[in-house]
Length: 82
Image (cartoon, rainbow, N blue to C red; front, side, top):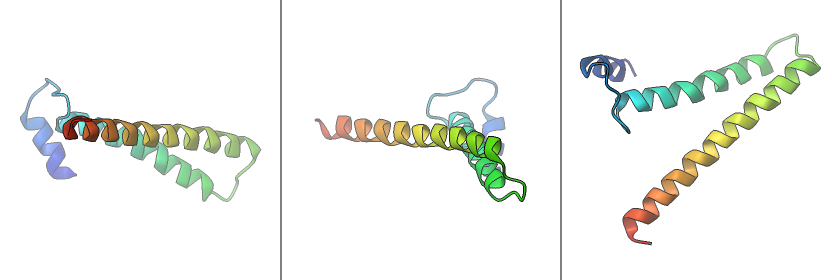
C-alpha cells in the first residue's frame, strides 16, 4: 500500500480513471467504514443507537460490494463479447 501511495505522488495532481489514485480513493472509501463497523461491533458499550448506525454503515458497504461486483461482471461480459 505504501508503494502505491508513493507511486500516486509521482504522477502529480491529475487523477487518471482506473489509475492508482482512483484505486486508493475507492479502497479508502470502503476500508474506513468497514473498520468503523468492526470497531463499533467490538466495543464494550454497544447500545441501540450504535446498532442502528452499524446497520446503516453495513448496508452501505453491502451496496458498494454489489456495485463493484456488477461493474466487474459487466466489464467481463463486454470483453467477452456478450
